[in-house]
Image (cartoon, rainbow, N blue to C red; front, side):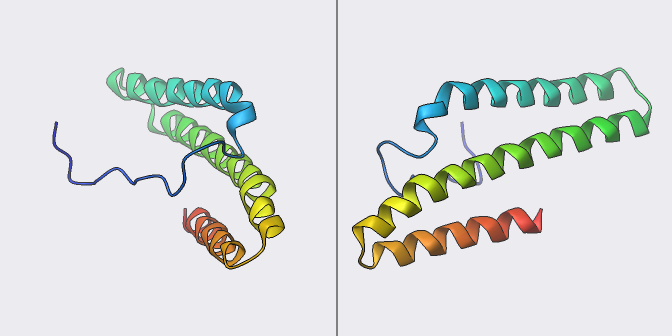
Length: 107
């Protein structure tokens, strides 16, 4: 299978801030996936446009909520760990978090 976009390589490997809640996160993402499949079904069944848009909004909010939770866990775990370690790593982690926040705000 060929794609036009490459999958980004993780910056670090190991326990991340979300690791302790990984099962809950996966369950939440499966629910969101179900919402997206529901959208496909609605289009396939020619459901009224406004009803589909309402579900798009709900799916978008669910993803945004998930992203904010993941960001909070990143700050509490990864950024806090870098701050404890000191050195230039803290600046890199803060820049990462700032870039992630900027991406979220653009959506």
